[in-house]
Image (cartoon, rainbow, N blue to C red; front, top):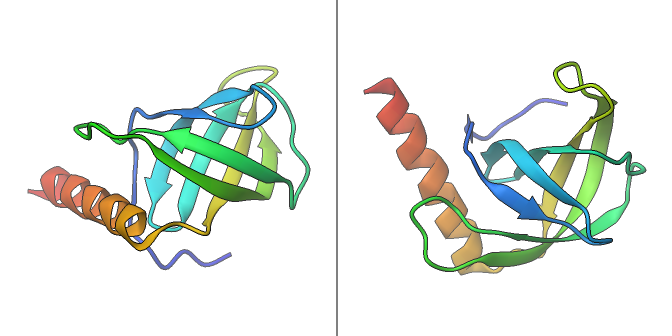
Length: 108
């Protein structure tokens, strides 16, 4: 899959459906790479809740698992590609702004 958006590593805790939790390895305007301790099937729908660093409000949205791979870093964990689904325009802009600012700061 060809990525068309900037992507930034960020320490973001993410809540998922089924009382799973995870951490974002990175985030883009299109979704996350999440590190979790359970395998999820391709196409699985998940409810997400997360808060961007520096923000005072959580983002609640839906996501869909687009890939799942055994972690090469943490034994018995999984890395998930989760694309955002049905983001509100203001949520999309907040995520895009965060990623743009973080990428600019890292390259300055």
